[in-house]
Length: 167
Image (cartoon, rainbow, N blue to C red; front, side):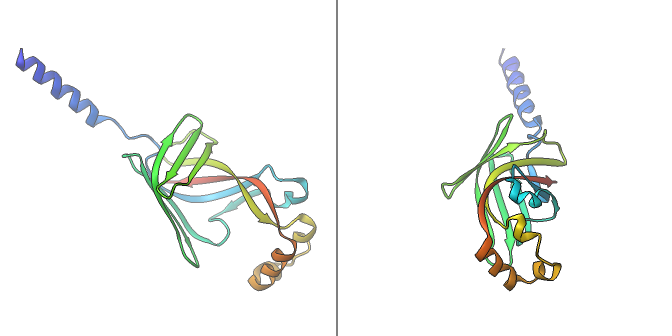
């Protein structure tokens, strides 16, 4: 009888250890992003952008099997570093930071072993088409000039930022 109970216990332990981690577990790097749900007078901002977000030099989200995460966004200035716990539902990825903040991302497509597409609504300071369309390439490349233009004409608007991460 003890032998049967022992074998049953060992069998149940090996099944738990054989479980695959959820597909979301791994290190994800931002590949591209795009904006949607933008007011008509800002629709010049719609479309796909390759690489990192404004001013970022890297964006890495590591989701661990123990339900913790680390998120690092590298900038020219101080980096953004965050840690906390994650939750995954059929429609959302929730990041609950140890800094008592949280982010809820909508899952835009099924998460695969290689790709995760998530979105969130963010308030961004953008230039309306009437200003952005008048800027030359040289002006877009001049950070001092561009800062002055954003200070004068930039407007905070809510947009949906869709981010494509790859493993």
